[in-house]
Structures are given as C-alpha cells and as structure tokens.
Image 1 (spheres, rainbow, N blue to C red):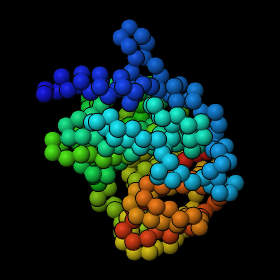
Image 2 (cartoon, rainbow, N blue to C red):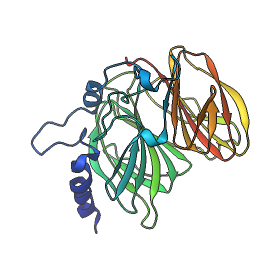
Image 3 (cartoon, one colour):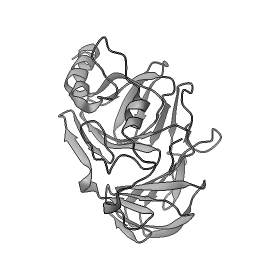
Image 4 (tube, rainbow, N blue to C red):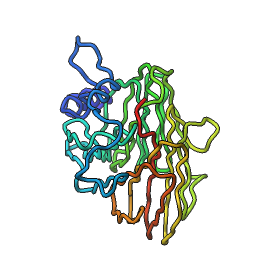
Length: 293
C-alpha cells in the first residue's frame, strides 16, 4: 500500500475512530485547539482524587487501572484521560496532561494532524518512529533517542512505525506549556552517549544549554537504568514542582511505596524524596510544575 493510501486509511480507521478526536474535525469545520480541548477538561491544578491518595502529597496509579484500547494497528494505555478514556479523577498531574503507552503495528501510524500550544515528548522504548512535520523536519526517532516538539502557534505532523517487520513501542507525553503561542520548534537528541548505569541521567529541561532536549516549561525529566539495588535521594529543582515517576521496567520503591512495571506514582509538596530501584529496572522521573499557568 502506498503512503498516500495508507495515510488516508489510518485517518479513517484510527483517528476518526477516536484516537485523536482532539485534533481532527470534519471537513469544513475550524480546526479545534489542542490546548483548549485539553484545558477544558482540567478542573484542578493537581490531583483531588482522595480515594487514590496514600498521603496528602502522593498519588498511586497502578498499571492495571489505566485506560486502554486496541485499535488493531494501535494498542494504547492511557495514564490520564484521553480520547475515549475519560476518568474525572485521572485528568492530569500538574502540567503533565498526557502519558500514553503506545504500541504501533509495523508500517502503521498516525496520519498528518495538527496540534497547538502543547509540549509533546516522545520516548521510544522499542523500534523506530518516522516523523514528518510542517516545519520541514523529517527524522527517524528510535530507541535511545528523545524527541520534543513545541506545538506553539500550530504545527502539523505525522508519525509512523519506520519498520515493516516489528512493532514500535513508545511513551507519548504532553505538557501544558509555560507560555502560549510560541514559535513552533522540533528537537531530537540521542541519549546513548549520556546514558549512565545505576543512576538517573537528565534527558529534558527548560534550558537550551542543558543535557538532553529542552521545552517551554519548568520541567526536568530523568531516566535511570538499573541492574542492581540502588538507593538515593531526588531533590526538586524548582519550588512548587512535583514529580511523577513511571516504572518502565522492573520494580522500585519511592518514599516507601512499592511500584511495579508500568505503575505511576506522583509526589509533591516535598523538597526531596527517597528512591530505591531494583534489579533490571528502568524508571522515568518527570518533574513538573503543579500549577497550570
């Protein structure tokens, strides 16, 4: 199947089937704003879900409580409300609005679609993702890379599994930006040279000069790959920020809370906290502002 027919089929069978209802409308209607659609669903600045709170400053999201969908070409788990998954207690963690755990079939993907005023981060876990956008960027993002896109005043892009013989697995993460209507931009880096065993290494920050990609938000992301039990403290970079930890592989313990593969754990109103990662674990820490500006 050629690319044009494939894109058309993907939009019909996938996007119109509610994978991206926030970004696609019928012909003739004005394109909706990604920011406004997501913002309209947010009724709080942090997490008022007292039923899932262990203390006044933590929240636990077990892997098996996530929203999920199987669209054939796409299997996805949603930590926060997205597309057809809606849970008023699972809308966001501060400015962290979307955390999707995607598995895309060989040679399949998302046809061209628009976004605005969101900071979008993609972290491949297996395989490779082909990216094209209206800024003229064309790239393959693979395991060992991190991609960031500031949608700003508006950008269109497409994402496809770059391989015809294997699935691509990735995390797609969306943050509300610190400032709206910035100039759209694309950023991609390889983390293979900065990867460190048995400690966290920075992959994202708000500073252009820092290690990793940068975005328009006071956020810091760290990845950690562990092959033995390691204990340490994480210190908050900016007062008022919280951290959402996501266990990609293995098990860990954060502030006494035991976590398993694909569990999420948020903590805020602290200056630092303890982490213990166990053997063969991979953990993503996402430090983000707890108030949406």
